[in-house]
Length: 298
Image (tube, rainbow, N blue to C red; front, side, top):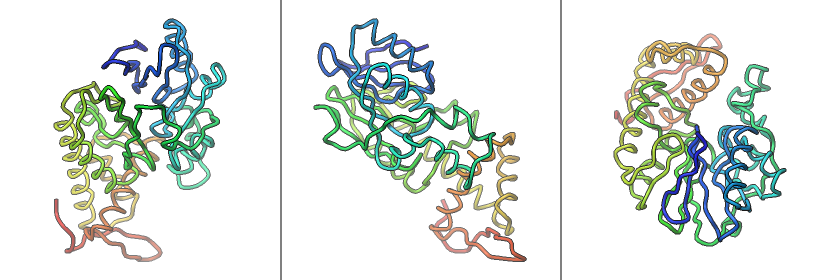
């Protein structure tokens, strides 16, 4: 774990739970794409850099989830590097409690205030094209979260962040976190059309052909959406639908899973409503979700 691997030319990645990209800018300077999940990850990255005699110029965050920005603060303090994040992700990197707030929908309880959901805050700056070194291109990949981005290097390597899950992850966890289902599906279609020498997703192995994995992820989203719509054949509250999702996929609920899966199910319901496949009604001061005759069946 935390092994430096050369992908193509000056494009590398560090093998760890959420792969960290590394691009050599010249003989001495490098930049990172994400920073790992916590201070310990940051320390291991610094040891790799020191062993190579490399200087860290900047960290470019793909998005603000804790396993991708957790090493920011440590590495920034140790090296003086810049940290950049796009759009809303920058605000979340500056104020990590926003992640738990977004998941919970209010002031989060202590059970949702831990390092797996809340990274240490970092002095992130807004990521623009002008902040990128020559040869590094930013790719908009929204859906998994608000303003997630990937990066293409001059070597033809594309770092895809969290826009795809491995077949093993899908089989084990069934429902991956999604903020915007429609944007996520659009991103997966975009990914299918990209050309690269090597694709590096954060949570599965690099590949030269990303299309089969993208299609697998699309199929899973469509399956989940249809199942949730089916749960609305009999009008039900959000909590009733969420219970059916957990029971149907054999998931075990705790505070964190209620927040993560619950937020994702809300996103599916919003998307299904926008597609005309479900609607809401209010009965005895309860909001009930119901399937409609309209909308396109997948």
